[in-house]
Amino acid sequence: MSQALQSLLDLLDLEQIEENIFRGRSQAAVVPRVFGGQVAAQALVAAGRTVPEDRLAHSLHAYFLRPGDPGAPIVYTVERMNDGRSFSARRTVAVQHGQPIFALSASFQKHEDGFEHQAPMPAAPDPVTLPTSAERLSGYDHLAPEVVEKFREAREAIDLRYVDEPPYGQFGTPREPHSQVWFRTNGKLADDPLLHVVLATYVSDMTLLDSILLAHGRGGWAVGDVVGASLDHAMWFHRPFRADEWLLYDQESPSASGGRGLGQARIYTQDGQLAISVIQEGVVRVPREH
Image (cartoon, rainbow, N blue to C red):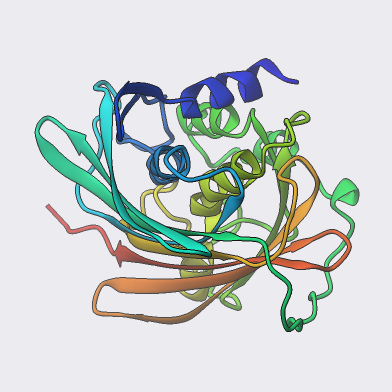
């Protein structure tokens, strides 16, 4: 296991300070606030630790309320909404400086058999044939060195490989609002199902709004032609998967209007199983002139 992955796992291993109350810390992000995927993952950890082990996360719905302060601890309070015969529901609120910064509702279910169908996996190249994040970044002379370094640090724990050029790699001309990324952790994980769901939640916030930028030929915050932030985030976990094995993140944007853009995606295992569906809306604006 890489040291960067171990550091990420330590970050997600919350301290329990009271029944239903947990405390987490933050790490430096590519933007000057707490990374949204981090707070979503930590909130899901808090919720999952109050649920019986035989109930697995099957959905989450969340709102980003305020920018998080990466220099201050985050307190997570969990409300046990319901424990039925098959499902458990939890609500987690993340608090900093006395104010909520994030709210998550999550549902957990005992395994049961039922109907089976899924959308087919789209075509994508083998991930091992694609350049790594570090290899792509080494060719981007148009990015400031400090931006490249932030990207490198953010991707040390996660092996994330774009099928095509990311928005910050090629911009200026609109492209199809569709993006594909392969990802897996840089090291093996324990066999804890919650851990794999939490890691996928963490990664899901890294690239989902890319397709909005592609549609308008924008490079994003890395080149300064867009400002924005995540507003809400929803995930449905359909089938078992491992976050330490290759997962295809197939993303698209069906709409942008009113200063907001919508990203939606499906995450497949390498053998074609639809594992996760994801939807996120974010603020996407042209920077104001001073």
